Length: 111
Length: 115
Image (tube, rainbow over all chains, first blue to last red; front, top):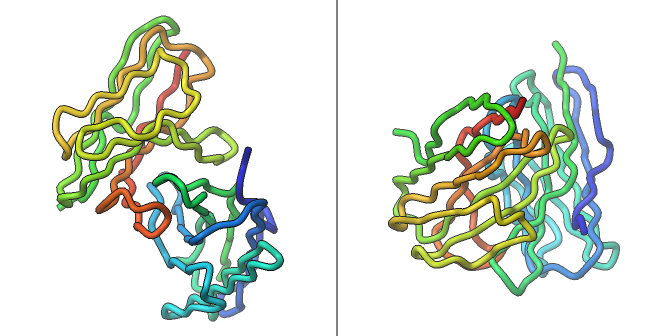
């Protein structure tokens, strides 16, 4: 069964605004990762957050993890047109080297 | 230099044909993967190999057969192609087999269309 569900499915904002996307999962995890996929390209790793971490930053990215709610959020601040892409969360099940990807959020940043 | 490369980039073929997709990584990674991404962008793991050994084999029809001649290569052969096989197939690699701690590096994808 699918582990991660992203919300919203699609998001359209203007350049300079912040974008927040959420990921919910069903079972306990050890780690959660976020990936970006530009149209027609492969996925690119953005950030990893461990289950004992609550927040992590990388440049304009801020990721939070709430294990009690089984959810994570990805915040992109001061968005740019180049941030237009699909964003996926990916979780591990802790027992095998397998990432289970969510359904993705399609972000459109307009000028 | 491309870290994870796949060939071909596009593949259009008739139902019933057999086709192969090749993947190579020059990152020195031990672990490689095949994913299938459907038209709704849902990405699902198919196989993973670690040092040429099959680790994960999800419930994939046995028409799909991966082969890893060495740890830098993981090829995917598909027999008797069906319409439902149309998708984008991604190869990926990671440094080690270490669960969700490892970053996965993805290839550009192979767009397969079965007519």
